[in-house]
Image (cartoon, rainbow, N blue to C red; front, side):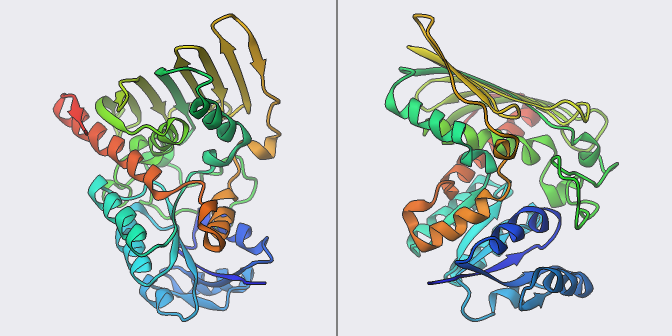
Amino acid sequence: MKKIRVGVIGAGWWATAAHIPAILSRADAELVAVQSRERDKAEKVARDFGAQHACTTAEELLALPDLDAVIVSTTPNVHYAQTKAALERGLHVLLEKPMTFTAAEARELVDLAARKNLQLLISCPWHYTAHGIEARRLIASGALGDIKMISVLMTHPLDKLLKGINTSPTHGMEHVYVEPRHGSYNDPAIAGGGQIYCQVSHAAAYLTFLTGLRPAQVFAHFDNAGSVNDIYDALALKLENGALVTVASTGATPMCERNYEVRVFGSRAILQLELWRGTMTLIDFAGKRAEFPPLAEKEIYPSRAPALNLIDAALDPVNNRSPGTLGLASMEVIEAACESARTGRNVKIR
């Protein structure tokens, strides 16, 4: 049995919580190396999770022989350079969101992966839920008719993290093996921005994941709520088919309350998804309702799915279920939204 030999660049909070456990769960994968800037930390992670090599730089890890793939789980400011180096080295890559700082950088990575016949994946667990996959199939089949409008409300209690007050995000996880570094989320030079880069990156990629459509225009307002980062975001988009989209997102919400509501309005039917609650309903224009079986708690946010899919895609390219093109579409929205919020103008992408 062929084993996919994987290295992890940025063995921090999310890598140790989701990606590394996913690799270790597979008999057809091997954790070869981990990287962290601090030698003691790199050696501890390697020792605790059974990696052969503990590296302190991405260059050191990428120089190792016989690697097949890497996971880039570092801060956004180094995503582009590290992913480009890995692709040029001939490795498949799973890249954390936000993909890059700019759409041009994201496009270059997508093109490079295609030229070298390598798999590039964007790490968005929402793309792997049973409801998301079925919603995408329904839309592609024409069950909703022409897609005319989509509304998204996305909230998650991360505002303190974006303001640099709190550095302990858990996504509901009871144990945090490694705390995030200060600045990873709240320093714009490192994170790119606040809610728009941290969370809207998910929602923007999900729009293209569901519909197959790319953004064409974006108008946005941000409210920083006294922070250097945006905390409240409101976006109005037009997709390339003319469909209208609204996205409202904030990290300022109680710890006990989070929302990810997606409403897709077609010319024949409406699809309602409650992602954090694991529910989905299809309502046609005759009033017929189809309630899909609710997802089990562990299925709502499949945090290990991206790393598992990296292994699948490395073994067979047809298995790539979250390609880099989705990250590129997300970066187009993010970049245009930032420009719109800064200038007060509608920004055309294509």
